[in-house]
Structures are given as C-alpha cells and as structure tokens.
Image (cartoon, rainbow, N blue to C red):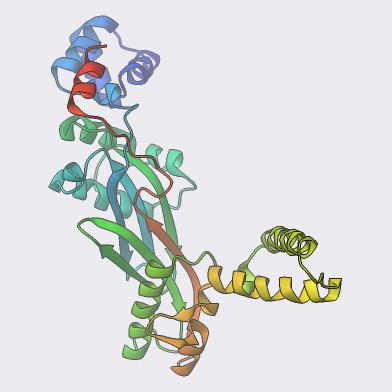
Length: 306
C-alpha cells in the first residue's frame, strides 16, 4: 500500500525515530501503526522516545574551527551519563554537529535539527535519533554559537570537556607568536573567570540601570540604620564605587589579568603592542543551569515498572 508523508510524520512524532526508519516500518507492516511501533521497538529504535523525558546533564562542550573558511563553532551536547559522553559514537556525533554549525548559518537548535548533517544525507534530527537508540541514552543538542573571523579556542578538560571558550581577535598579524600567546591567555582567562561582556561598552544600558537601582536602594537602606547618616551626594559616590566593581567583575577587559593581577586584561593586551582587539567571545560550561537527575537503583527499577 502507498505510505503517505503524513503517516510517516505521525509515526515519527509517536516514536521520535528517523523519517526513513518510520517509512520503512510502515512499509513492512502495511501501514499498521501499532505493528510499526512494535517493529521499531524490535529494531531498537523506538526506545529513543521513551528516554526523551530523562534529564541529560552530562555530555561535552566542544569547539571546532575551520581556518580556511575562518568560521568556528562551540556546541554543548548533553547525555545522561559521563560514560556515554566519552564513547566514540557520542564524540563523533558532537564533532559532526559542530561541523554542521560551521557549514550552516542557522538561528537556533530547531533550525539546526532540520538541516542535513554535514557528510551525510540525513538531517541532524535523524542522526540524533539514531544515536539515542544506539547509545541507549537521551541526548540533547542544548546550544551552539557560530563565529566568523580570526578565531581561537580552548577546552578545559577536567575529566571530560567541561568548559569551552571561542574567541575572536583582530590584530596586525594574527599569526604572530605573541598574538597567538595572547589569544591563549585570554581564552584561559575567560574559562577561569566567566566574564559576561568584553568591555563596559558592551554592557546593555538596562543592565547598568537595574544594577544601579539595586545598589542605590541598598545604600539607602544601610544609611537608614547608620549611626551618622550620609547625604545623598556621598551615597551616590558609594554607588559609583560599587558600580565600578560590578563592571570589573562582568567585563573581561576590566578584570585583573590572571597571570599578573597588578594589571587588567586591557593593560596586558595593550602592553604587547600588536594592535590586538578582543572582538567577541563565547564561554560554555557543561550542564550549567541544568539539574542533574539523581536516582538510586531501586528507584530506577521501580520507575521502569510503571
């Protein structure tokens, strides 16, 4: 019997399996959805859907740069266990995702899932579904960033790639050894201190305004209980000092340089005299903001019986 595209789509939504797998299952079962689901389960593919609600908080942060194209990518792909994240199949998948980000300027994860995986004739979603089935864990492409220009990267491996940075620099000669060393040092700085912006000029006005309101309210509250209350002009000076510290903590160029805390990152870069400019950076830390699911063996067995 003829299998419609709508039927294939419906089975895909039911099982989270690849389009071609769903089409083949329907063909093998003459369009019987229940039999097709059973067929996919027998093939070890439909279990991917059953794992879709399990939290994936392990995984890898990964960077890749194509020097010829001057394009790079940083991605975070999560798995349920560290063991799976270290498997060759998982690492290969993450590398393919990074290459696909380099090759396709897409806006978000949903758009990425819809494009063809680089080096294959399948979509990223189809390859993802296949890896979920073969690795037997839920896998999530959580986020990615794509950057163009003269790029440098660093991965901090603390028993697994846990922090990654992707950095864009401009300089008189980006191939100069001093520039390369500077890029390495700045990547390490970003990984260690987790700044949010390159410089104060990059901080959105609303972020500054909101923080200033908070600090003023705090200063006024402290003033109410002070033995000798301060006038408003003094409070404004106090807030100004606190705002300076605030921007130093969130702006890369204002931070104390990790290899010499007597100078800022900006002064370190300027001291090299290579017209180096830090343009942009992205820092990912594996699993940040995710809550890892904790289960003991008995609870896991019980949950499987439901």
